Image (cartoon, rainbow, N blue to C red):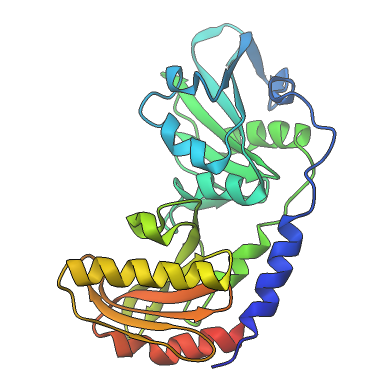
Length: 298
């Protein structure tokens, strides 16, 4: 198999080491006094840290922590003479560009309407969400307000002007675009990839393969030894689950094929510090050609 994915991975690691901007505004200072043309901030800005975010989004706060959440700011915007409805704007400062995308990707769907703001956003009848640099932003309705996309877009544009410049998507996403990739399906997980603690950190996307929609997986093992340990842990889990599997120790890396208890047919191929794989296959060997092309594509 070709190993050019390693070059792309090395570039990703170099980019990931670029320092974050040394001078950034406090997150509460990023909320504009006026959101759009007529929506004015009502009352003070509320801020939340890792210690008390649960007080604002109880039940969801734990979702944000693995993505390097640092601080959040929220404010209500209303039009003069109308206090019964408005817009709520939330800004979350995350650990990195990839982390901001990661938390954003928990909410988006390829069926939603994309919004031209930030690095990427989506909008529906009650909210707009986008990410830009290391920030994740939500614009939501409050009270009796029901509005169309232009209202949300105007408000989001006002917020985006206050954020650090950056319309770039994380370069790591290119590693999870195998043949048949379905746009807007990438997700990043800082831990517990596929719900398996032993898989650790990685990304997923969806692809079309032989008429089926299956999941592409990138395991970010950190080192060749780390990936080997992940394969061994996966094999132990499969063995304890009495699931059929096979590991082939070969160059350029380990290959695992199995009938996973949760994900049907799966195939994983190690490539240096990474492993790429497919889940949801009718049979593990159905993914062999796609894995080969994926390695060569990168």
